[in-house]
Image (spheres, rainbow, N blue to C red):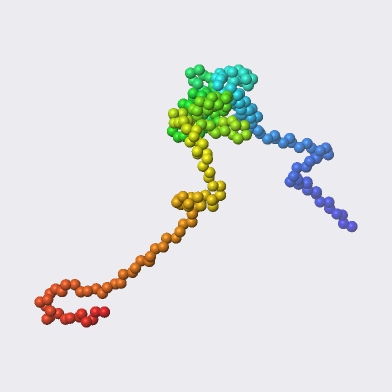
Amino acid sequence: MSTLKTSRLAPNAPSPTPSSTSANGTKRKRPEETSKVVYSQPLDTEQRDHLFTQCTYALEHLRGQPDRWFTFNDIMNYLNIREDDHVVRKHMKDFFHADNATQKIEYNPATKKYRFKPKYNVRNNAELRQYLQNQKSAQGLAVKDLKEGWVNVQDDLRILEARKQILVRHNQKDMNAKTVWNNDSTLMHHVDPEFKEEWHHVIIPQGQDDLRKTLVAAGLKPSSAPRLPTTTKPKETKRKTARRGGKQTNTHMASILKDFSHLRK
């Protein structure tokens, strides 16, 4: 009986993936994942929203008192911004001094004060009349735009209208002024009441047919009359005449040259 030779057992090859258990059977702990790095922004979103809100509050505060000039500290005190908050104060000052077409804050470098800047720099009756007289066109001004820098605009416009210094178009609901134009009172003349009465006695026909008949009866042509087609004679076509021969020359060579006149068509 032959004896079997025991072969040497080769050591186990390492596993391609690390085991989650240690040699003693205890569960290994996974290494902690590295946390994501948060990069800093030039200006935090919350701080940016805070600055935008502060600028809105400052603009509304100036809009509420358009005739008054404010210092920078007056505005900062209204917004409760501390003196040691240099970042917010710098951003607020940059906003007040921004040079763009939509800027609504006016700055006076002589006094270093600020006030609300309306669409039209008109704040009383004298400035309104001067503005209307200096403008190149006769365009009217909307009262809602004048109200931005002129609180009592409706009351002051009634005074100018009573003096016939402006022309006013009113709203139908509350009869407040809606649009104003300049008016030259020297061009307004007195009209005789008898002429006004005769003018209002003229009766205008209500219907289009009645108005057309009235104009035709007066020998006038109404604009709504149909256009009659114009009759034009056709142009007469001229008959072509046979071309006659011109003046004969070289008569001294008549006996030599041949006559081809009989070949003409």
